[in-house]
Every structure is written in structure tokens, then in C-alpha cells.
Image 1 (spheres, rainbow, N blue to C red):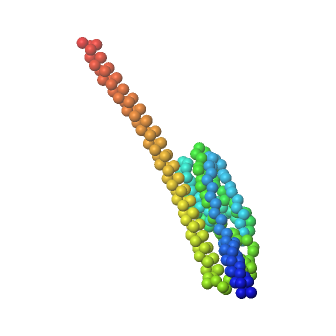
Image 2 (cartoon, rainbow, N blue to C red; image 1 turned 180 degrees about the vertical axis):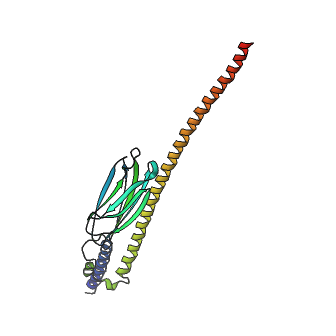
Image 3 (tube, one colour; image 1 turned 60 degrees about the horizontal axis):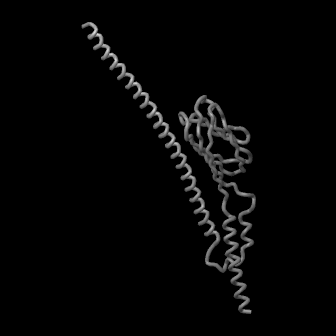
Length: 227
């Protein structure tokens, strides 16, 4: 009987540990991040839609990576059609919206430009998009936790903090990559512009030199003819 009790106690501890690990993974609050880069043609407007829940949070950050002027018009509207934020001829922006149930629309407008297309990057961060399940329902399935010298709440808090910091690190790296791409495009544009005008200056200098040589030779030829 003693051996059976030992085996049962070991099994209960094992089940508690497995349940704890499964529950910790399932108890994360859902924070969804996504980013997208697209080309907005000249004279066009592109709109995107995001379905949100009540009491959630929608954060959008955008940057114009390439294109003349590095600017674009932007606005975001609620499910009822009300414009919440609008930017005019800006190169970047960050907006946060406390949402309600429905589809939110955000648009990038390049209709003011008839020649230059724009390369646009934007990132969406959706917070508090939890399901309707009660996060405390898992506790009734956990048994034998009292035999362990640890608290599930502490482990969950620690892992959630690590997850939040990792998510923040990914967000910062994504934004830095976008800034790097925009700076690289600016440098390449400046490089092409410098090369173009250098070639123009070289051609002008060669033409001026040829004209000067021709004028000087024509002066000496006139003197020879007179003599």
C-alpha cells in the first residue's frame, strides 16, 4: 500500500506540473502584431479594414519609405463612419484608438500626387483581443498544486512580463528597420541626383571648353588671313 501511495503522489505532482504548463500557455492575453509594406500608385487611395472588439485597443504606426516628398494623407474612421484621426502630407505617424465592436477603416491617400508613387510601411498592434472564455476557469482543473513550493500566479506574471517585453523588442526592431529602409532610400535618391548633376556639369564644362578653343583658334586664323 505504501508503494501505491508513493506512485499516486508522484502522478498527482506530474499532472499538476503538466496542467500548470498548459494553463500558463493558454492564459496569455492576446496581443496581435502585424506589419505590411505596399506601393501606393500616384493619384490613388488605398483603404484597409480591421475588425475589433469592444474595450480593445488598436494602435497603428506608418511611415513613407520612398517617393517624392516622403508624404501621404492618412485617416482612420470608426465603424459608424466618424473620422477619428487624419494626417495631411505627413511622412510618419502613430495613432491609438480605444475600440468598439465593428470594422475600422484606415486609408492612405496619394491623390495629391500625379507623378510619384509612394512606398508605405505600417504596423498594427491589437491589444485586449481576448476570447469570451473566463481566464479563471482553468483553476478548477488543477489539482495537487498545494504540494509544490510555487505559485501559478507568480509564474504567469513572470512569463507574461517576458512576453510583453519580447513583443516590445520586436516592435522596436520593426520600426528601426522601417527607419533604416527610408534612410537608405533617401541616400540612394541623393546619390542618383548627385551623379546626374555631376554628369550635366561635366558635359557643360566640355562644351564650354570646346567653344573657348574654337574662339581662340578663330582669332588666330583671322590674323593669318589679314597678314
